[in-house]
Length: 90
Image (tube, rainbow, N blue to C red; front, side, top):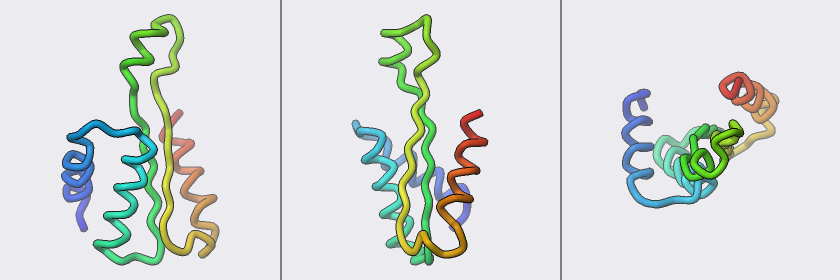
């Protein structure tokens, strides 16, 4: 599966109203069921404009959610993946 297909998947699934945590889980489910990997990790960084509008003086509009499927214990996958997500956020 190429990166453009992942972008299409996110675009299709996010076209309707979602809670960010549910959308992150849904993306992980589709990837895990479709490409049948050992492990899938999804990290979503999203800006929430409702929070930005309510608290304009604070920079609290970005929220990070993660979701994992499969054997996350293999080779410290979860720890390494969360390190990457931390770098994305900063």
